[in-house]
Structures are given as C-alpha cells and as structure tokens.
Image 1 (cartoon, rainbow over the protein chains, first blue to last red):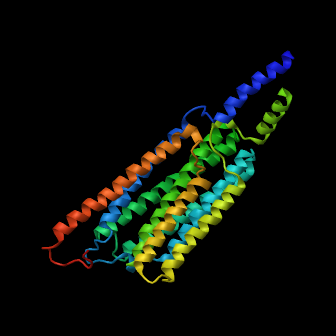
Image 2 (cartoon, rainbow over the protein chains, first blue to last red):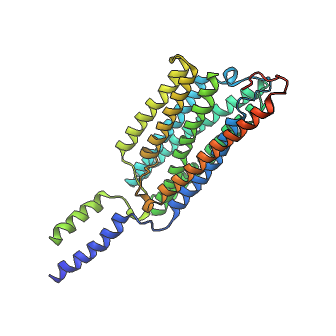
Length: 207
Length: 132
C-alpha cells in the first residue's frame, strides 16, 4: 500500500512535468522571439519593395527580367530542403546518428543548390545592366532577396557546424535542442520565401 | 488503479520523446501532409501566372496572395508545429504581436507613401514608364 502510494506521488510529479510542456530553459522560446524580430526585418524590406517596386526609372521591369522557371526550381529546392530537414529531425528523435547526418547533408546540398541558382540569377541581372544601382525597384529587389539569400547562407554554415557536432558527440539533449533551433530557422526561411516568390516574382511578372 | 495509471504513463514515456527539451515535434505524417499541401499551394499560383488562366491580372494577383497566405499557415502548422499550447502559449503570443506590428508596418508604409506619391506626382514630368 505504501509502495502504491509512492508510485502515485511519482506519477503525479511526472504527469505535471510531461503534460505541461514547461521548458527546462528558455532557449526555444528565446529563439522563437529572435525569429519574430527577424520577421520584422523582412516586413520592413517587404514594405520598402511594396513602396518602391514600381519605380523603374525608365529601366527594366520585373516582367522584363524575371525568369519564372528558375524561380520555380528555387522554390522547389527550398521546399524539398524543408521536408528533408523534417526527416532529419525525425531521425534525430529516434537517436539514429547516421540517417540524421544523411538527411542533414541532403538539406545542405539543396540549400547550396538554392544559393547557386540565386547567385547565377543575380550575376545574370547585373551583367544585363540591371544591378541594384539601376532603379529604386532593383535596389529594393536586391536588398530583399539578397537578405533572404544571406540568411540561407548562414543557415547552411550553421547546418554544417551542427553536422560536425552530431558526428562527434552524438544526439544528446543539447544537440537535439540545437537541431530544433536550426529547424525553426530553416522552416522560417521557407515561409519568408513564400512571400518573396508570390509578391516579388509572380506579381512582378504580372504587370 | 495506481498500477494502471503507472503503466499508462510508462507507455506514454516510451512513446514520447525527450520531453525535457520542451519543443514540439512533428511526426512523419505531419511533414508529409504539410509537404503535399505546400506543393499544391505552390504549383497553383505558378500555373495561374505562367499559363495566364484568369481573365484579369487583378484577379490573378488576389489569388496568388491568398494562396500565399494559406501556404504560410500550412507551413506554420505542419513544419513549425505552431499551436496555442507550445511554451505555455508564449510563442503564439509573440507571433500575434509580431503579426500586428507587421500589418501596421506594411499598411502604414503603403498608405503614407501612396498619399505622398499622389501629392508629388502631378507636376512632375512623366519620365517614368509607369505612373500610378
């Protein structure tokens, strides 16, 4: 009887801890708040583009410049990298180091593919004389899309760092927390990209 | 009774994943559903614009932005695992606050700058290709 009593006490304790999802420390919440502040940066850049996006200064417009098939491939690359990161997280939850590393590597390669296509596009635009200094439209375009690309660059560097750490130290609680932060960052970048391809590219080609 | 509840919790623990780190985790099903929805919601706007399906550009623009908004919500739920309970509701609170600031920033900028434009544009030479 006393034994049963002890068990229920222990259960109550555990029940409270597991169901409340109380964070042991605030890393994930803090990281989420960082993402929200990043979201504000992008909101301001989107606002800039919305205001300046039609000021062509007699230069080329989005309809002249944007190559939708490239944008579609870029979108597909980011979307695929999102789900491969999801697979990496699932492998990490199951404490399987090798599949986690493999999925992270695939994610990183997709990210690199995205970056190289974007650099190719920027290079192409600048060589056509449609660099950031050409018009207010192109300035705001390069800043908005470039900032997103910079985020993807840092995300890829972070991903490689975590791959090295996972390979060396395995999948402890800390490592899962780090992977979780990068997961939020990576998916967040995909959310921003939805805004970019819809608002900048698709609507830019329309008019 | 206590033994039964103990078993139940044990099963929960076995199934569960390090609850100590407090994050929300997706299942394979979540990711696949989210991915399929995202692919559909991406393909439709590209198709609408590239094949020029709708009769007016205005309608296409509204459809593209509407689908983008839906896709953002899909990503939030299936990839970022947002719900009103994670971190005791604080992530949702931060998100709502951010959205309010974003809406004010976007709507305010467009509104003010549009007003400025309409006041400034009239006497200027029409050297721009597009004048609102």
